[in-house]
Length: 440
Image 1: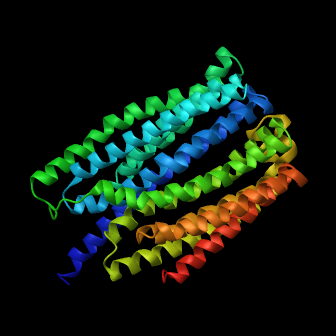
Image 2 (image 1 turned 60 degrees about the vertical axis):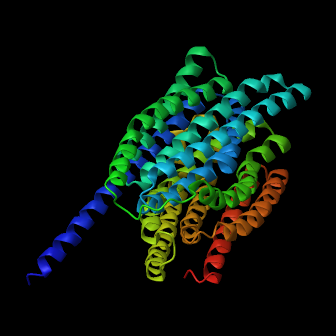
Image 3 (image 1 turned 90 degrees about the vertical axis):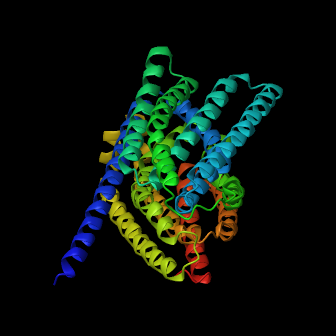
């Protein structure tokens, strides 16, 4: 019996710690989802569908940067945090992340210069302000995502939750304020996004000092293996396949709005964007609770992926969470199928209500895609980003073709069908790939 009590206490402490972490993740994501939903209401009231559609197209520029440049770097930083701590070389790791971030920023500035030149030659100067603000927002939000990721990997859940919740509210409130005070312009709304991102970045940097100081103490005391590794090379090799398939992922993510903009109208882009933000994004963010909670735990358990026993435990946990994500998606689909009209009346301006019947299908598409992302953590934890690249590229190309076909023949409804089809194909591809790699 004497042995049992300490074991019980250890398990109890671990359960309480994980429960507390999980609660903070739920709080952060919950605040972010609520802020996003209220923000949709504010901006759809402040901007007509055409201006709202322009803002959505501007966001695709920011998405391109984050999917192909800063986003992959952030994933690499998260993945190598635990090995860096185990090796007692957090300082070297942090210097590597900083150097890669500076190189990424230089590339983004080059993209901005080229973009302005292209717009000038194409005689579309009115897009200069929106493009500039979009790229600035991409840089700021990308930095925030990297810092958030490292803090999440460090299990500082309360700090991550605080910034996630505040960022979502600040973005829409400041954007709506700019539009109300200075004019109903998509560029002004994007400038509001940038200002909110800068405020969050300042706060992030202040809190980030805590991680650095703790790690410095740990290294001075000699905790860990104390072996030096070329973190920059490791993060780069892990991240570049994500960057490559990020180009195709962005193409798929942006193809819906650009297909509508090119083949129908900017007004349709605005209508669809409201649907996207009410259906696809919230369910993806909700499932993101599991991903955000699981990722640092999973990577910490796996370490450098050399231990078969540690790998198996992480794999089983991931599949269980995939099943939970699919079950919750099904429940959300049923609820919104019955209440879509009421939800639209409450959360968006009246002129957007004609497409409310498509909401449950967007939720289904978002949930299936999010479940695929959870499943993909199996491959990420095993450093198999090159394997994911094939599935990402193939399904994204199919998704792009479906988006243009759907917009051409059925407009917004066709885009919803295309998005649901893509999500399903992507989930099946990742599940099959995991099975083929023996990660079942």
